[in-house]
Length: 187
Image 1 (cartoon, rainbow, N blue to C red):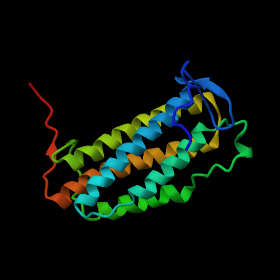
Image 2: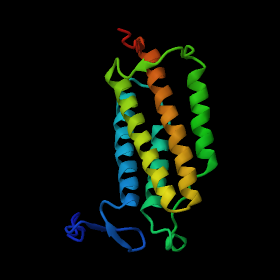
Image 3: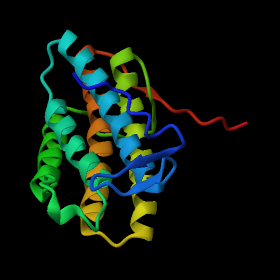
Image 4: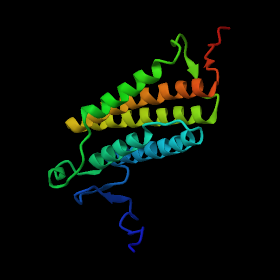
């Protein structure tokens, strides 16, 4: 069995897929590292959903996040030599379909809501905020490198954060937890 540690990153560098060495604080590494963080948060959320017997598409989403992470972890100059899976427009359509399906049973939103009310709802919102951070990092990366894969990734992450927001609301409805309206201080 191979050891988990290689000692090749001990001096603050790592390898992209393709072998290119970059600093561990490289924007590309920051992007795929944050995708990994998002994937872990969604895995935790999915575990909670299983405890309340609510089916979800979160496992499919985690698979797409691995696709995104692999694409971001690959040296774009060397990517054609590797069989990196692609994100597809249909992946975004799936999220939109799921959002629409959940929205059918939700009351119209007329106010801002505070994240929380139940640990599962809070985890949905935590995953949403990690997703938004991931999206912001990918937008910054796109400013540095023109790459249509990153453009599609940004679109997917944008829709995923919408999905996670609606999922949080849907979980509240399912669990019979009232949304907490944000009441701005006016004094």
